[in-house]
Amino acid sequence: MGFTSFPNGITSMGVPVIPGIGQGIGLGKIYWVVAAKSSSNLYYEKLRGQVSDEYIDSTIAAAYAKCTAAQGDTVYITPGVYALTSAVTWAKENTHLIGTCAPPGDSDYYMNVGVQIYTDTATVGHMFNVTGNNCQFHNLSFAHNGAIATINSAVRVSGYGCHFYGCTMKGIMNTTQAYIGSCSVLIASGASGYLFDNCTIGSNTWFTRDVAYQPQVYYGGTQESGLGAGYGPQNGVWKDCRFLDNTTTITVPMIRVGGVLATAAPAGDEAMDRDHMFLSCHFSNWYGGSGEIDAITQVFDLASLTMYNIRLIDCSSQGYSTWRTARSSQGASSGGRISSNMPLPVAADSGQCIDVTT
Image (cartoon, rainbow, N blue to C red; front, side, top):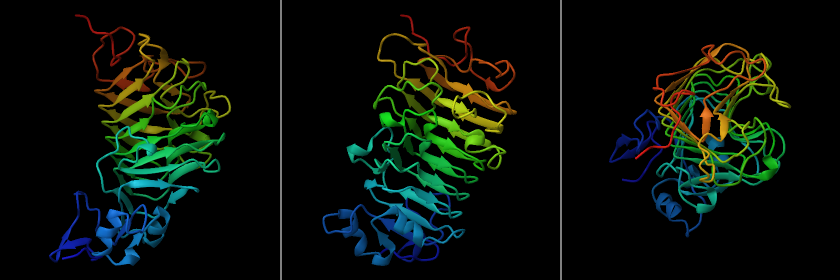
């Protein structure tokens, strides 16, 4: 029996099934995206014999436009390269985007592996802007290579309870993005209850970053969140994620929380609130094999003066000398902002990778 748009998802022999996903996705209508609606695209050739053509599109925007908010509609996207010339805003509550492939890992869009969503358009700011609540995203690669010199990101999240599984997010892929507000992921106002599971954030291959205080992950504060634009995100989780970077500038962090955008000066901007968990994550800065294992000062640059807690559980970092050092007006590093359950392999910090001895 062919695929249908049965209200409870895809059916096989009359029985609703949810392919590869066991988390309630597919309960609404099902839409499909292929890289091209042509006979040369094998995915389209397979689908069009089993799915009404009105449920198949060649762009994410077209399929998303057909979704209805709050009924569990799901867009399944087949492997291919999907170039964006304008930003996608995913605003409909409880709608989902699923890549029908394995997680992309550290692959780039030019590899044509899996589902590659990218832009090289200079006018695109936040390439994939998630403002809807309780949305899920699986097995997708997001890459922003546009030559833009203002605040931008591959993925911006402001929706509540949004989850990302097996996704890759890469910003700062163009030297023009050498701007303090550029990042791979921007956690903005309203993004409480977020989850990034088995994701890869950033890149260590494109070029060496040298903009002071420019992060791969940016909690925007009053620049993008906080009291000036809502409220600081609460109670988020990063689980089994890899954070990748390539820099020799000691003031370039992996993650920045708040701060004045123009200077990264500390500010009481409510960029983060409550607990944020990092579970079994690794933070890696590629330093070219020079042996400078502690080349960069800190993983986290904490420039928000409001109350929040970062919990590091079974995490590690390499290419950094410490998790966080206090700079002017930040307050003491022992103030409970960052806590860890890891042992102390070196006196400076727990969880830092050190050279082994034979």
